[in-house]
Image (cartoon, rainbow, N blue to C red; front, side, top):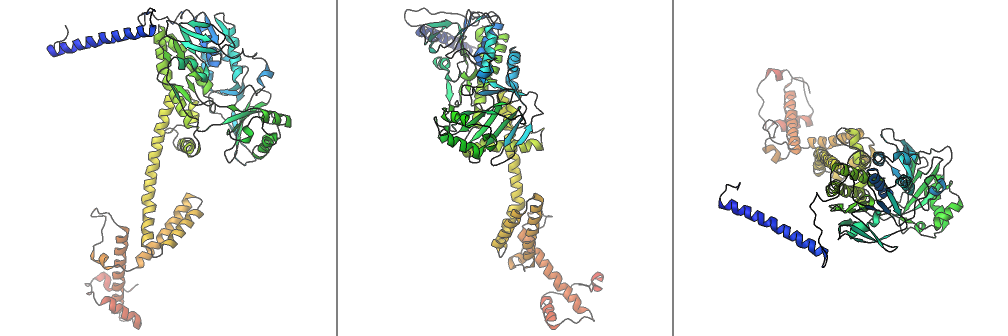
Length: 623
């Protein structure tokens, strides 16, 4: 009735109504097909019939007992939700107070909690229980390949000091927090075998037999991501073109060594990368030998003599701190593998039934401390979404819209920092160098490097956008500088080389001068002095006939001046002035030049007519 456009507008509105009804029929048929024969279709209006975020669903299953899963269970229980069950295939963590258990590096590896992880744990009210068991890292000491002394750098400009602890010890601290809440139960040593999302609740088949079901399942099952794949969420997987394995090397540092820095070294041929982080506050360190999978030292049951030779050759400063028994144990131990880059694309939820957090949503290699930190950020994002939305489906949709692009950006950035060979030089080493130079020259215009920006309080998408902008400005400046340098040096030098009678000699002298000059100022002076030699040589040559016939271009008529034409015109002018001066000398009564010079002057002055009388030239007798 509101349309006033006549018959065509009325027909258009009729087609809109038909399309609306047709989409509703299609949804009904799809729901009936999913329900199957003999089963009723559970209709409910969204978002009115979805579970409320304040009281939560009737029960919740958290698939995964790692840091992300336990943090999610603690967060939901503190919201007042009930009947929360944590299912994990591993056993319950050891006591967080057991120092000996966490110093067994054959079963544990260390992670670093930066500003992202610390802020997340503080918002979840779990930071105090974690901080008391973590070591502090305030800087880095690095040995370049072949260097005998390391370079120490203490970070004084960072708002957060990195905390380091074993990954399972973080889970143990969160487990102690969760065990004190009555709403949380645990099913340890239980693996999820199947996932069924066809009903009103999600049913998980267990490896021990039987099943559990709940209206909401939080998929925090790590890189296995069984729940996400069974729920038909699209998982993007990348081939690992820079595959590495690692072995842990326990160290006991002397008392005169600092116990709050990250020690690192590497070999010149790229065979070995070494990093050591504090495992306790008593100078106990865990070193990581990052090797290629094909390396002889990386094999299980390897020869301890090969490992000792590698330590003596590449890590002599640490080899003396490792006894033979430790070398034999590390050589016999099988290597540990690193996860591959993967992420769940487009959306991280299925209606109001499943939501994906942590490594199940995005998997990266633990090089820059982004895995655990971003997983804890997922839990905080889910908490905020539940606080802001009244219903479950609206909250999970808001969470997915925020974190799904973050998962893609995180994996994309991390993968660009792990490419091998020349590709790594293009995506990692080169950008790091450019960012360091340009940020030092213009800190207000260019940001720090990508690794430093990832530790800041900003989103991964913002980091990627900013680095793309910085890269565009850097390439524009470099292109402009290269163009100016080409026009100022290369083109004139090429012109002189082509016109010089001995271009090979000039080229050799130019290369030698540039190679000998260690400073840009010296190189510029040597090049300028070298360029003046060909100019003088060309100025001394007589101009050819074509140059004499053509008028010399000038800047007054707005014409581009060719250096060759300018030199030819200058040479012609010098020749005319010399003939005029010789003619003036011959007119002086007291001047009698030699016979050869008089013959030359007469020959030069013969074709020209005498210049007009001028008082300024009549008394001129100088050279």
